[in-house]
Image (cartoon, rainbow, N blue to C red; front, side, top):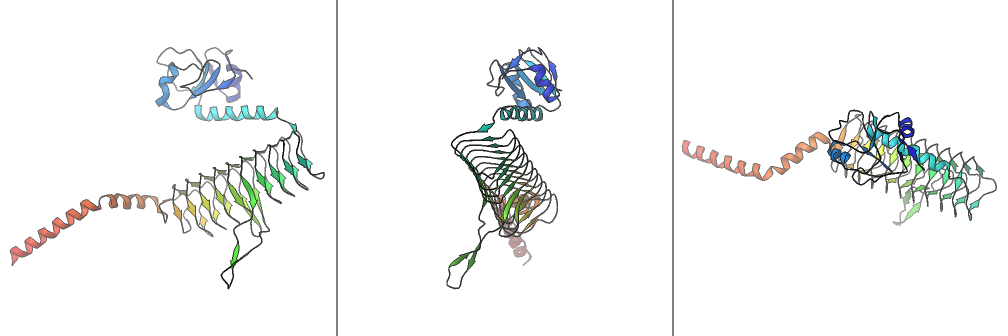
Amino acid sequence: MQFSASQIALLINGKVDGNPDVAVGSFGKIEEAINGQLAFLANPKYEEHLYTTGASIIIVNETQEIKQTINATLIRVPDAYTAFAALLSKYQEIVAQQMTGIQEPSYISKNATLGEKIFIGAFAYIGENVKVGNNSKIFPGTFLGDNVTIGNNSVLHPGVKIYHDCVIGNNVTIHAGSVVGSDGFGFAPQADGSFKKVPQIGNVVVEDFVEIGANATIDRATIGSTFIKSGAKLDNLIQIAHNVEVGNNTVIAAQSGVSGSTKIGNNVMIGGQAGIVGHLQIADGSKINAQSGVTKSIKTPNSAVTGSPAFDYTSTLRSQSVSRRLPDLEKRLKELEEMIKQLLAEKV
């Protein structure tokens, strides 16, 4: 597909600086782009590539100054990075609209309800009473268990597994290999030292505009629901245990784990490899640094913690600073002790 500079400017509310009729058919990084590609410049440290790139069109900030001759057509916008992201989203929508129909072989239950303009890839399994909304895309090898609901405009990439009774909202993206609705880790210890499985009869509810990365696992509730609230973004390789609630617009980076029944508030940011124990409350706006181990509830909104066990971010940095200076402080302490001994000896 080819798009002209004027068409692209219309999509992202930009202003063309150069030839409005020049067209591109693909994207490229500004330092590597070739003729016929579109690039963007948001970070000033890459400005030198503005004058050497082969890109035909470049999205730039409206404040960008031109210090040398350039060959590309510019599209000026208030925020180049945001505009480029919006353009990629539009491009994906256009591509997705062209992908419709049901590939064979695939299994679709006779009482499943399928919306309009959907795509179901080969080797997909659609169970009893499943509902798939309009414009949703179910890629090859996906499994939808009985009574699963998929909203409108949602995308399930190859190999996604949605267990029975789970609910996926509108405009949700789940990447390859993720599992939603597997059993929570519930086992009752017995007198003989063995463990008896506690049936997990709840489900998972993923609300609208959520994105879940590849190979993430979200456990179904023991009773009730595990919730991923609207706008939340989960990275790859994340474990969400049973009865957890992840709040609106909360983001969790890769390899993090949240134990059972913990309630994470809205607009929380959790760094990679962080671990949160069960039955905690994480206040709105909290920031949990990478590799932190959270063992107590965070009750104050917009606070930041780091370390294991996690502690107030600023206090932890001070402690780390002191720890690095301990050898020097030990030396100074010994010197002070010697001075005191000499002063005491002189008095005698």
